Image (cartoon, rainbow, N blue to C red; front, top):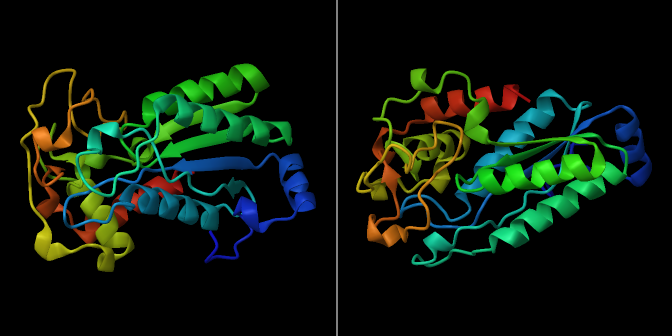
Length: 249
């Protein structure tokens, strides 16, 4: 947010301006990502970058209706710690952080909030935090993975399901190609569908419900740190995904 002066960013405003936004019943958006490996072709801040850019677009489209908080850059992702660069936060810390932020927002008179994740394992923790905020404050706090609000994902993505869009995959590679192709090292893209998909235990992002893989060490099924068909990601697909998500807010 520090590269932008737009008034929809919470931190850019004065306290009287935020008080006025609360009176107007603006929706407060809290993005949360993760710091973790995304194959050899994407940076470790991929989840943060994608969800931040979606919120930025949403703010540009609804400048008076939303206020966007700084992205929370870390998450519960201990199962990725077998790759260098991962920063893992305990699940209870993630929930407590989100609850503290959201109850602070509610204290200032905002009663509509969205917790939006760029990291596929976050949704269960976001759901707990949102419910806690609703009970404690009476504010309406929703929680979701960004893919949940993309209209008609099957018409955009073409990799097999489940398994084609698990991590650093067609979906995330496409999004990054659309948002900033210089962040994608295309010569290092590999496909990996080594995770054995089950009926209830799956690595699949396009469902919108997140990734449900327990705590398998990623290197146990992918030496590259990829789950899915990264080579099928294109900038055109990514633009359709990002634009659909941003418009939904």
